[in-house]
Image (cartoon, rainbow, N blue to C red; front, side):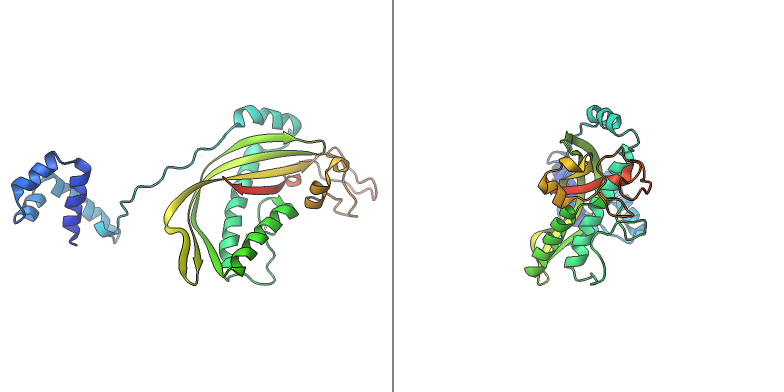
Length: 279
């Protein structure tokens, strides 16, 4: 269909049946193009077309589908930040929030790359460190295993999970929980991306050409007293002396009780991402 006619139809729908419909009836089909080009709508069309041409685009390249609004988040930051800061005065909450956002994006990209056949056998899953390929915050064995399981499930079914054009809209503190042995902060993030599940080159779930709005909850955990951890927590997390491997029982420890080596003070490196769930 002629792009000009497409534009006329769109304009008619947007403006409504009153003014535009009357204009179209008076103009008549034969003189429609001539009348339209000399109208206010025609001038608008010419201006828009000129702008698009500068970007090597046409009106047919414009996606007129409605775009979903970003999801809202449950943000209790104003109430919970003072409580967290009282327990961990050295913790930079904004830096931690940013690190969790980066980890979320990198986790989704790992799933895309590894199910898409671009992984290498010697490339570890979600390595922590300061390099360009390393994640910005440590993760527990439980976190890494859940991601690995999702990847293996998709590969076993011959499927590829794709995430692209990932954008973070907002992140807030959803909760701050305490147990005898741990402290846990849960961040809720509103995120947008193209997402689809492909099998044999065909999309079987989602729409890789349509932005999807969703939310993720990421929980990060800190060990207060290892002796008070439950068996489940012990299996997932391990905080040890970097020199001899002995358990570090309290955050107040500045020296290993077994080998005497000095321990780093409490900071962001002590925290580990433990859970990731889509809401």
